[in-house]
Amino acid sequence: MHNSYQAPAALLNNKTILITGAGDGIGAEAAKTYARHGATCILLGRTVSKLEAVYDSIVSEGSREPAIIPLDLKGATKKHYQDMTQTIIDQFGQLDGVLHNASQLGHLSVFADIPEDEWLTVMQVNVNATALMTQALMPALLKAEHPSVIFTSSSVGRKGRAFWGTYAVSKFATEGMMQVLACEYENQSIRFNCINPGATRTAMRASAFPAEDPQTLKTPQQIMPAYLYLMGKDSATVNGQTLDCQPK
Image (tube, rainbow, N blue to C red; front, side):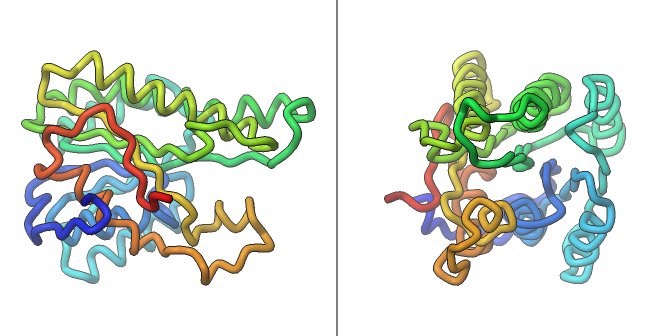
């Protein structure tokens, strides 16, 4: 259903959506796709030049002008997220959706050899930053009528896999965070879900599987139906779920 979803052209009209990791890969494609369906996108990422390229692409298509927030999740504090939230409220009035897409992979290695600094960095970006940002954004989200928060999971976040220790543990934590929030807010209009994109033609995938032929993988554009489905009104009753873009 969600992978063959045909989104109405005006699905996200007048909605403001924040996308993290919006500079390339799935995040960039999601931002462009949401913009094509009427959303005002807030592009968050650490590389300004990449964000500007996505901005230019969205504007050139005639979509609503996006906003850019350059921020490195590795070093950002709760105060950064609180200030960001106040700016969103001041400029847009509310936040209708969040796609937590930014992630760090780390290196694949046996668990006993995971470097401490790499463990801490991956947990900071994939778990701590996501948690602190979600906390800070709640006032802006709760001003919206039917806000949707999407976390990015992985198959290794549901069944652990050898050598994927750091990334897998971070995604188990992401799944848990989503489920806790979904349960806490189950009687309110806000909802929380995960997307597992599966094997997708991105730079992160290439770094994990350097010998793999990228032409055998789906492109970010091909998995966008699920991202549209979860962000729009047609999934209004879906809460606490993990949707697979490429079910086995």
